[in-house]
Amino acid sequence: MRTILITGLGGAGRTTTAAATALAAARDGARTLLVTEDAAIAAPLADAPGLTVRRTDGAGAFRERAAGFQQRLGGLFDLLGAEPLDPEEFTEPPGADSFALLHALRTADGYDVVVADLPPLPHALSLLALPEQLRRYLARLLPPERQAARALRPMLAQLAGVPMPAQWLYETAARWDAELAAVQAVLGSAATTVRLVAEPGPAAAERIPAALTGLALFGHRLDGVVANRMLPDGSDDPFLADLADSRRRHLKTLRAAPDADGVPVHELPHLGGEPLGPDGLARLALPALAPAGHPRPGPAGDPWTVEDRLADEGLLLWRLPLPCADRDGLDLVRRGDELVVDAAGFRRIVPLPSALRRCTVAGAALRDGALQVRFTPDPALWPR
Image 1 (cartoon, one colour):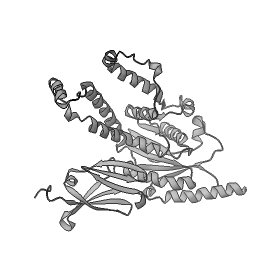
Image 2 (image 1 turned 90 degrees about the horizontal axis):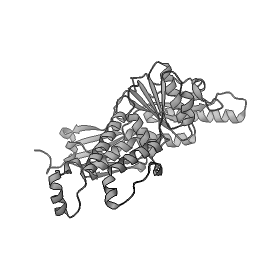
Image 3 (image 1 turned 180 degrees about the vertical axis):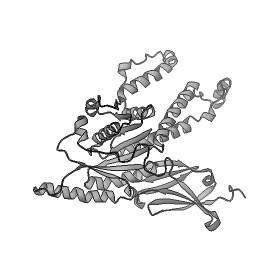
Image 4 (image 1 turned 30 degrees about the vertical axis):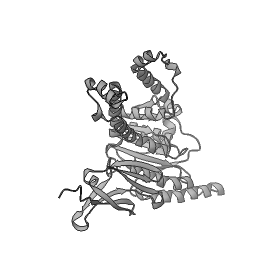
């Protein structure tokens, strides 16, 4: 199954591009699913052949899960003499739509192509990083190896002086971890890629490089850039002629971005209005930027590589490509067996490989668009 995650700057036409991409895949004969929260784009495509549109409902999904969680707490409510909330009393918190979208990706079975209409940048990258971050929190707060046998729990509670976490809490954490792991598997699959949508201009020139850095930091692969609302050249109107020239100049900047080298860039024309429905989207003439099942070659998942230079230089080199990164926006902190990396406003906490855990950080450098961290063996920990 091919999964295409579409995002871009706010107002650049992400949802329209996602719909056009899904429609093009369906017309090519692929069983296609479009995941979006936009009712305006979903309704006109409801009857398109070969295309299923799933509109995410963050509020409904939250109420369903909150009601189920409350039901598991039934005994606690009785103990406290409290009345459970009615289903209609639940109001979704900020971010509920994000969880609904991730759930839709996890349950998207039986399709050849899944196109996801993501939130705008930079929120989309935060959303894609969420499963990894939440799994780390669960592992830290409720590590499975610390579950005690039921018979020992009362005794351990007396020794510790505090109540031991209930078994259902560990069971709930295990279910959440399994679901997050399934989402993470989809996002890290070799068949999952990201497609950026931009309206060439000063805002895109400023913010797209940071997005490329963030994508690389989290190991996501870029398979295409869509330059939206391009204007024809040669207009007699001076304003339109200047605007068209400006977009051409900024499009060259997008093409020259380090991580965009070799990535297909497709130009979509400005139609003078919002293209709605199959006919309107077909006017964009958006082809498949990469054949289904053949995403752009490159690493999937974890992009970090370790180079053994022990024989020549006495060190190990951990390397991560970070296109468009600059030294001012880059920070590293070694925290036990993890490395905290901040780049372009994004943060990823990366577990160190076992060999590097027995080393000390000797330095780091940003060279040729890649972060290079040097490790030297710790004599007290390194096997002799």
